[in-house]
Length: 295
Length: 324
Image 1 (cartoon, rainbow over the protein chains, first blue to last red):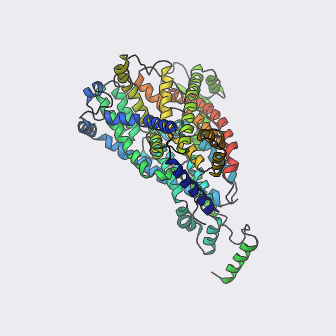
Image 2 (cartoon, one colour):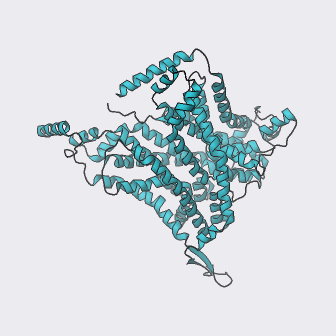
């Protein structure tokens, strides 16, 4: 059945391609290119701006590159003993570590929701759904107050632990487990004497693989994006992630325009890793839910 | 495996494939598997939420001159803080500003997202792969960094727009931080950051539609524009509604963009511009945790009302295929 629809769409696509060679639709193509230009504009600007020194920044035409990129990089690297690279490392730790733990927790919980019956399942799931819809940002302030009470403020854990629970990840994992792990496979594993944990780890997790990468990516971006939580939790700048670090640089920059180029170069460098990750893992951003592993 | 088991399993499978008696799931396993999520969810969501509710019923009572230890005492005040919030015009102004900001942001962002998604799905359009990647790219830029970039581009001394205007028209009187313009300036940051993600959601929905419908419409002589407007858009309506509701929720708690512009614009954006900025301001700068908590609850309730609508729309359809 799925073979048929796939064959059908392949046929449609071939017809599509044949017709496309005839004539380009100019207006939609132009709109698409204008949209791309808009999306890329700030990126182009920051690339150009990061090559300028302070005089060039205020005097040269905005998109004309200067000749101070290396100078800016070394200023940034030497700023307060290389604290920028500490922020970079911290961000990798928060976003990477948090997202891996989050994907693991989502996988186990989503799989349990999809494949087991237990008391309170509906209530628990609805509770978690409310968590999807009341996102973590509103909770950041009370979380901080509690963490401060426990004496955990200004630790790596204060940022990591709230990042692990992702209601949205659990929600997605339940969908993936329901769609990708057939009941027959689990029952067969049970009959072969595989323990429940082993079935989950060796059979369900590989089947949910692409979906779990998607959960990892969403959570990675969410943690990287979350400014308020680390901004509230952390006091010492050696534990800051990039966003908080750059923001503190910016607050100093409003009084010292000399720091503008440092902020701009820092902004460029903090975009690079995410853009690379994003381009490399592009196909995981639109996982087809019907792509199961068993025919 | 014993032969009888195989036979019985086969028989069970042959006669009643839905019956699950032959491979009973262990009863305790799901509870064990739910432990980590339940513990963490309780610690990270439920306890803070409960703590906020508790704090929102408290207030500080100052005795005597308010000097020395024990002069400030925390006492129960019932709904006192909520009465305060309801009469706090600054708080409601921040809610109104967030709604106004949303009225600019959401139609433009979703309109563009739908437009680009339809173009990506249309025939005879060139550069589709490039366009898809380019427009989605801002999603990879953290909102705070995006806000810094746009904020810099709004600063008169650095702005490329001001310099272009100067070159073309000889005028430099563009003020991105004007009383009204600042809404557009901040909304633009949101549009830039959010269009690509919503475009991908709608594009994925479009790709999953059956292609045969379009073929029929084409044979009947419909143009691409008519197919997009009359067939594709109505068919992805549920996805459009979903993105609209999620965008509304995100708007109510907008923080990063106005907070950055607040820092960069020197006064165009107040420190209580959006509800979350007000909560942050009251809790830290104003040092009134109790008022901040009551405000958090009010915002959470507002969002909850929107959430119920989402639940109704999605819960039933999504999980049709799994084992119950």
